Structure formats: structure tokens, C-alpha cells
Image (cartoon, rainbow, N blue to C red; front, side, top):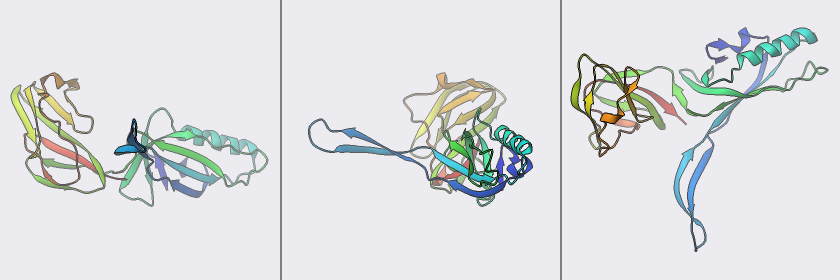
Length: 232
């Protein structure tokens, strides 16, 4: 029902899930205050974070085993970084989150059903397809979803290459030199690296880095486009 970092919550402790509430994306408007006249100039709307609240019960009247279950649940709800979370009612998609609040159990009311674990999505607050699509550059693709996809370009260079260009038909980005090795161009973070070493010093900054978008599109160049669709 709830799988976090590959582990189902039911395998950790005998919990009875009461409810799962996935909040909508928080919307953070960016506006510029006017110096003289009233109001403000709207600039853009920025998507913020979202939370997943899991409310459950531990129907165990033994205080020792109940405490052990809570310890196991807190260990399961990792908080050192964001991990993949899968919910059974949204098949094929996942969220990436970290635990931001632990339950506050009562020692006396062992039957309570309002224990809550809260997770927060920071870096990627969108519903993201678990499966990844791979197509060769130059092939027309249609990217579904209502949020920018996670997209990158990969290529293995047997030897160094010069003046390598990638284009979406409107904008182009050119690298004056690409050394031999495994190239990864992350279109979301606007970075490029070969064997993990940045090659952004070879990027022509008079160009515009390609931006991941939804809909029909064709990216030309040499390599493979890999993407995962996302929804708000």
C-alpha cells in the first residue's frame, strides 16, 4: 500500500492505515511591488513543495511491542535524503520525499488511530513516472504530463569530438569540445559532464540551454534522449 525506498510499511510493523493525504502543490507567486501605484506586478507562479500524511493505528495493547513497532517505523521513515515513495492508488507513478514529522503516541490510549507520519517532497514535488523512455536524438517524441519532464541526453564518445550541437528546432546549444567518455547532459539542471567531470567550460554561452517541455518535439544531435513524465 505504501512503499518507501523499496520497503512496504506493512513489512515493518502491524499497522492499520486509516488515511493517506497527499497535499496539492503549494503555489508560490513571484510578484514585484510597485514603487508608487497600488498593487504589484505579477511575474510568474512557482511550484513549491507538497506533503504526504500517513495516518495509522497500532492495535497492540502491549506497551513494549508497541514501542518496538514505533521504533521500527521511525527507522523505516528515513530522513537523511529524499527517497522514492509509491502509493497503491497511483500505479506507475511515484513521489520523492523525506520524513519531516514523527507520530506522537499515547502510552495509555493504545487503541488510538491518529498516529501520523508526514513526508515532504522538496526537490521533485511532482508525480513522476517510474518507467523511463529512451529514444534516439532526431526522433519525434510526445511527452505527456502537465509538468516539465525529467530529461537528459546520454552519449558514449569513443574519441573526442568538436562542435557538437543539440537543437529543439528553436534553440540550440553547442559544445566546442567533448572528450571521450560517457556524456550526460542534464536538461533540468542545465549541466553537462563526461564520466562525471563537468564539461560546461566547452559550452557556448551565446546559445540557450534546451529546456524540458511537454508535448510533441524533436531534439536533434547525436545521442539518446531519456525522460520521465511528470504531473502536478
